[in-house]
Image 1 (cartoon, helix red, strand yellow):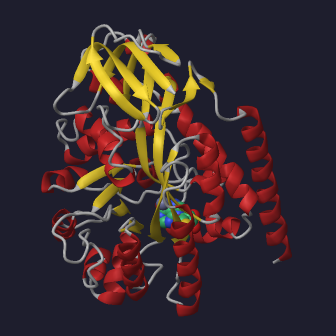
Image 2 (cartoon, rainbow, N blue to C red; image 1 turned 60 degrees about the horizontal axis):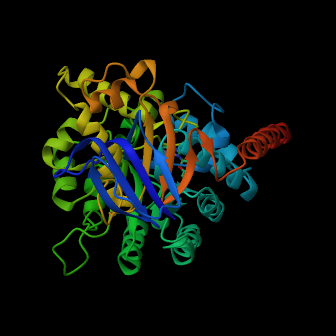
Length: 448
Ligand SMILES: CSC[C@H]1O[C@@H](n2cnc3c(O)ncnc32)[C@H](O)[C@@H]1O
Ligand SMILES: [Zn+2]
């Protein structure tokens, strides 16, 4: 497809270009071929989008979620992480089927398209199903099979094989929209020997690693009690955090550390030196009362920070606009400094920073980059007046202002109409799967 977007206000996120008040973008297949101010050049376009009254910007990247958990939205609220996982979520997940994860993932893709998220990082089970949902919905996904070893070598071997198979079968599929990572669940559910083995496999396969780290004070205390050090130092002792390939001085393998709430100054220094990327999940951290991540300090130390929603059972949606606003407000409140985490930094976290771990050719609108972008409706009461576009996006805009989405040069939603999925079918099937899942869990509980 050869697409022209004209009459657009454009936020490129490109340092050398910034904002264009009235401009155009030409998309040639999956790539942006031209961006400019003023009148568009003539051409044989298959499609012309008149973006008058809209802002065109890079799509949002959600760097930590569990799409299959979309079916568990509202299943168990108002609990701390340990009880939430052990008493409610893991027993429910034991009843999950591949079909559940397929429809849950597709529902998640639908919600992300509606709310302007063009790319996401996921860690879960039945990941072939999530991959199929990504293929079908047209969005971009960096997928990892979540390996829970539980310090049991046999279990670890079986989990490792599943993680490795996902990488081998799906890396680069769907015209490169699907990428993969290894996903050891967390340092308190997997041994450091297992995590070190996973890291070696990631180096061998040229993919990254996605892991939960220091999410709760309970994790910090358990690690200190069992190993005398926190999770970051524990894994540092096996060289886990180094993002450079052996023999190279350049950061090349993303290590994506989700949550990173209970970080000391020393941990932050390690992340900064080793090039670790943090996925900050403020809403999930607030809801599970896990704590407040020291994001301002991490950014000051040079850590690349991105944003994620976490799964729908701890958020309870996939709306990155809520995540952006919460991130900004929470750092200001925590540091008692209103200049902490300004709007522009938050938008960068949700776009160009996230793109660094998913696809480096996204996140910034410029020629040669992939055409992953969204149109935000500015003809809305909450968009008048706009003195600063970053302020609008973080403090006033909402996910439902997203009007049109293009990923990899393909239009997924136009003028609020989803073009790639039968929305009703997805919602109906996901709803039925959720009802049946809950019934199976209840029946099992009755038998116990
Ligand atoms: C191994 S696949 C993912 C695994 O993680 C669980 N999970 C979901 N949210 C969180 C969280 O915030 N911290 C730790 N683990 C989480 C999910 O239910 C799966 O079991
Ligand atoms: Zn998570």
